[in-house]
Image (cartoon, rainbow, N blue to C red; front, side, top):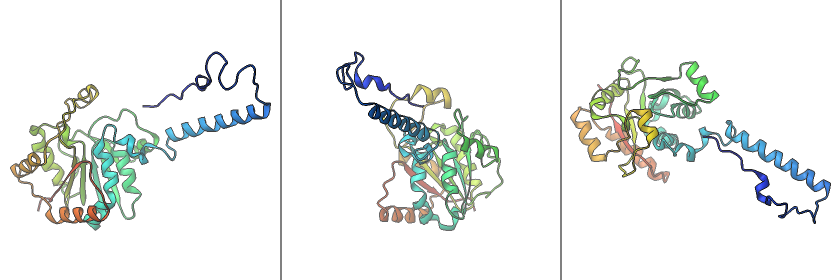
Amino acid sequence: MSRRPGNPSRRFGDNGGGLFSSKSRSPPVLSIALVVMGGLFVIGYFYRGSGGSGSRLDSVSRLEGDYLCSGEVQQAIPILQKAYGDSMHKVLHVGPDSCYVVSKLLKEEETEAWGIEPYDIEEADSSCKALIHRGSVRVADIKFPLPYRPKSFSLVIVSDALDYLSPRYLNKTLPDLVRVASDGVVIFTGFPTTQKAKVADVSKFGRAAKMRSSSWWVKFFLQINLEENEAASKKFEQASTKSSYIPKCQIFHLNSLH
């Protein structure tokens, strides 16, 4: 959502009394300088909002507004690289804001990345549209089988997507995510909270996000015969400690199917 720039005239009062009153007129040179400075400020403001140095791709605070864990994936990429090594060479990201995660991954050396947006993209910038146009990112309902062959990717990273699925669909979706990964699946999911569902979320996703506890997830993994990737989990924990990285989401590491 774009913000409207405030009305500069409000800073000085509406009755002409403030800094520039009728009794104290500024020299023409000062007035011109102020106009130039104001113009530069406006240009800088709109440049940031249109993909400049303050664009959504690099702005964690904006990503954390709705899809905390998709923003968390971008933060965790260096830690994932240390934990998975060569397994990061061919990555599939599944979840909202996949365009931005894929763009971040593609900046890494020797890394190929693809993405799946589980829901319609309402507002896509030019970079996201370019990724969709060349097939790097696609919109697909993850409640149905993914359009990929088994072990098409070395690693599958999922964020914010599973929280909106009921166990009925998780029973099918999770094994399918594991099916297309050769070296494992990493799941970023929210912590349980008492936060009420947003009306926008319910209308867009069909249901409110259900934040489950770690014990719930572990039990569910066992029920559908999915195993924890203990080696990767340990490496991730060690790398996190060395880097003083504290995740804001729950992170689970699963083995691929053998």
